[in-house]
Amino acid sequence: MNPPAAQPPPSLLPRDGVVYYLRRVLDAEASARSFQELQGGDFWRNDEVLMFGRRLVMSRKMAWFGDVPYKYSGALKAPLPWSRQLLELKTVLEAACGHSFNSCLLNYYADGSEGMGWHSDDEKSLVSNAAIASLSLGAERNFRFKHRRTGETVSVLLETGSLLVMGGETQTHWVHCLPKSKRILEPRINLTFRLMKHS
Image (tube, rainbow, N blue to C red):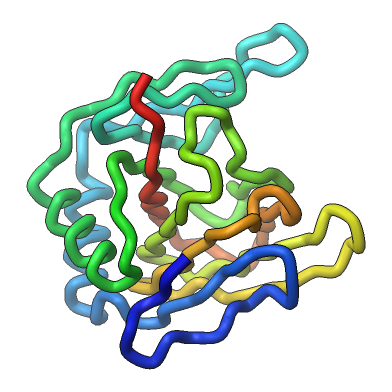
């Protein structure tokens, strides 16, 4: 995994993976503009997952863009075509982190009552050990990693306009989550750019 050539940041993880945080990939104005455009999109749908043989509709909204379908939690997401805005963001992020992506998962969190439990992004449809780049817009949220074997944890505050890049064996050895928080009343949009296998 190759971080940007200019002043590569240190990995947030002590071992068994590489995660680095780029604090200002988008400035405040670009972050606010991107958030407003995405928030008003007509593509948002409530996420659906398959648990214990039952299909559950989640409160969190999502959208899947790109070149390849995505299957996770028993649900198949057909991709929407890239928008001009997402292609522009993809170009910015690829230049910032030095990796290429062919798909993007968008999540909309209305406030701190919505989050994500411990999981890893290790679906078979993902290219193994390829970088995953996560752009944050809107409310600042805490993000946590936990080592599968040792239980040690690492936390990072995701600011608007920031980019978190996970690579190497991170998904094999670590799980991550977005904890809920009653103190957070504002919405957040997360764009997770990925490299998917072409079937």
